[in-house]
Amino acid sequence: MDRTTTPEFEEFAAARGQHLVRTAFLLTGGDAHLAEDLTQETLGKLYGKWRRVARLDNPGGYAQTVLVNTFLSHRRRRSSTEHVTDTIAEAPVTDPDPSLRLTLLRALGELPAQDRAVLVLRFWEDRSVEETAHALHLSAGAVRSRSARALTRLRAVLGTELDDLARS
Image 1 (cartoon, rainbow, N blue to C red):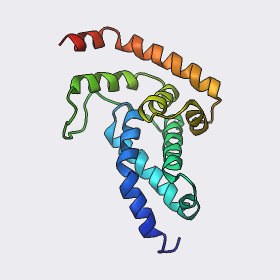
Image 2: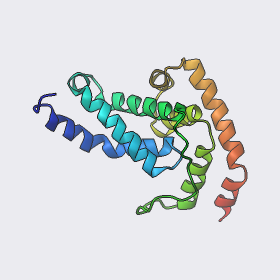
Image 3: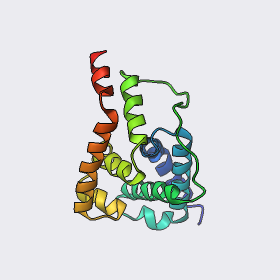
Image 4: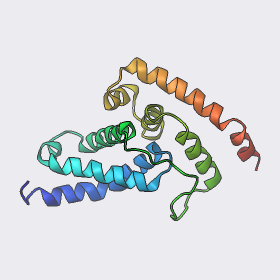
């Protein structure tokens, strides 16, 4: 890659990097270190193809798709034996209700990777069914049914925890 594309890529990475990390954090069920690793791997893949990626209508959307595919590939690898723990990396908290966030992250972490990816893209990233299906290489019907099942599982995992949080 020639040096003329490097500043453009650096601007893209600076502008979209935190967004990618936040999405990866949700996909990993709250594992900040893995989220950073997945984001770095995603940016590395994009850098290698930057000339082609920069010409796309939506390089940010493409980056999100690469991130989700990187996450799903990581989950499939046999060497992927790391597990999310109940400790969160130290970071400033600006969330008005951190206990709700932790409860939701814990519940997301108990879902299968594909279901988590569907929920994060559909409800956190606010993508349409079709965009989610395209990003995950699924049919629109599969996204709708996975989404419904994942939400049911999420509600079952959360159980009375949300009720307890609402009362406190």
